[in-house]
Length: 379
Image 1 (cartoon, rainbow, N blue to C red):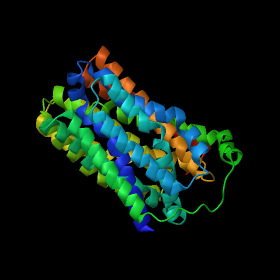
Image 2: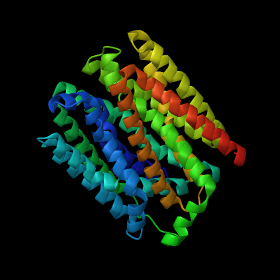
Image 3: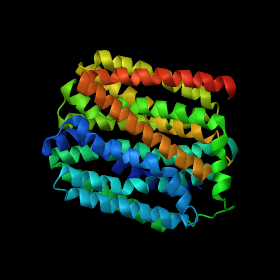
Image 4: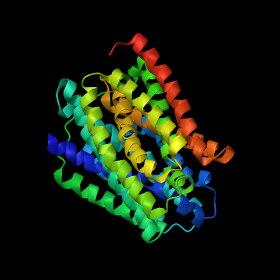
């Protein structure tokens, strides 16, 4: 069981590094193509928007096919798109190359998360999901800071070379070590889509959306914030991203433990903690030493957000796991798009430091929706 979970985590590591590896190199790409930081943010937000728009439809369309072969195909497309990005001679070409794998992103995530949820029995399923999410955490720990460091030492193209190599390694891992994924009971499109009639699903969707949007309205511009507010250079920013990701491993592990005891109570603690962190970042962002501590605290809280958002949504419709996981990819990536857009709006109209206020505002809204969910559904 654990080998299957760790192999799936390897795949999510490759997927996560490609999607979010650009976060640390947005300033370099903006400089290379002479465009503003909010425009280059579309490398992140357009990817997420494509996933959001097409996620459930692509998953329903491809659900009859062999699951392992589908996952291998997705990783192959991700590797090819990164290779195209290396040779992009304009921002438009780079943007198109980023869009290519976005259509298939939900397929890998939906299969991986549904398999993980079924690997461990009963209330232990959240631990299985947390192991797969650990691959995403490792993408933050190693993938994002390494991509940033590669751009600092060489050039921004070398970051995409790194992403291509990681996806190829993930492909080999899935090919050699993932067993055949058995389909116990085939589900029709009608049997899967009936969950869309559940009000609880949509309340959970809104809650997860607001949580992730708040996270990425600030994290999406972390490199720019550290450069302009904390006055760090490229190497220091890479180190900060590494600290951010390393502390996130602990946060992801703790969230997995706490979720088995209470989903809504764990989410409540997460939202309050992230509000406090954003307030501290707003007031102490220009102080170098305090930021060393705050980055670790930020990563510890932030990284648990995706796992909590996933369990929040999937627990509201456990009878159709692959489809609800594809809905989660729509929710998560729509939220990333909205969050990055919101953060970019605050930057272009106010200042880089005000992105923390945008995150706080979205988290307060999430707290209100969580209260509504707790009223109609007891944990």
